[in-house]
Image: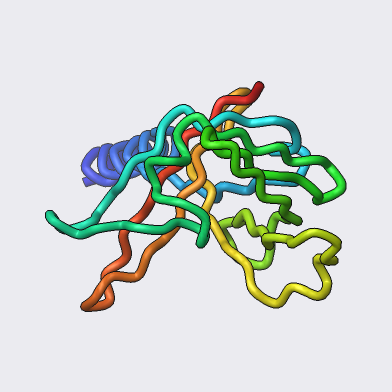
Length: 161
């Protein structure tokens, strides 16, 4: 009887030990991004649509241009929050940007500024979710609400210049 209890205890100890030492299969992505992570000059090398139904038309992004027109654009994000988005067609949009850290997943936010306008006077803006941000590359995802409550994304893939 003592041998059965002894072997049961050894087996239980081994099971607990092996479980505690195994690697976790859970991946937690918090996408904690700071202002310094994304300050600088970035070029959009690709824009893609994710989750849109067939035939759905995305006409205007950020009230500036069609989503395709952002390929090749440059985003100049200065550390003080000022910056600009320059499209390949010559359009240059001054912006004021920030990183919103109020959610578990941080977001990139910006306001478009007209000539002489101050950011504090602008009440509307745009919010993009951070995808992968590492070193010289970044992904910003613009959520788009679709009919029926579904969310699709316009993905901007950046390379640091």
